[in-house]
View (tube, one colour):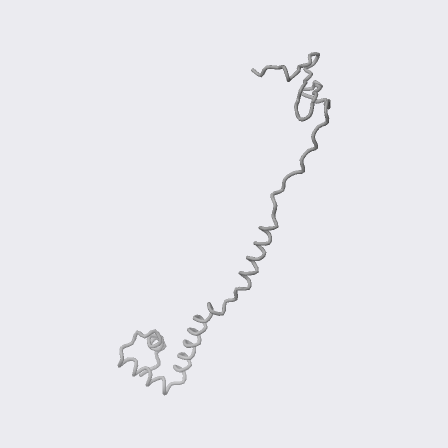
Length: 127
């Protein structure tokens, strides 16, 4: 039998009939080059099948721990609440080039000046 790497692969994969397997094995006993091919196939198969078992879980666990710490330590950012306005606070605002005054009591807007006219918002009707 002449050297045929394809037959060695077929033997390894179990694709040969019993007489073909016997002929290839007989050839392997006397041919060091073909035995080297068989040895490399065995090494490659062993390496590929063992690789998943040798996988380390450390990177995955580290990433999970970092994510958990970041998630558990995260708080929704909310701005600090504004202090409540003091009673009878007055403010000036500028709208369309005109200055207006507003009056606030507690947290309610109670009076608005519109030019010469003051509007008491507690008594005003919204239309």
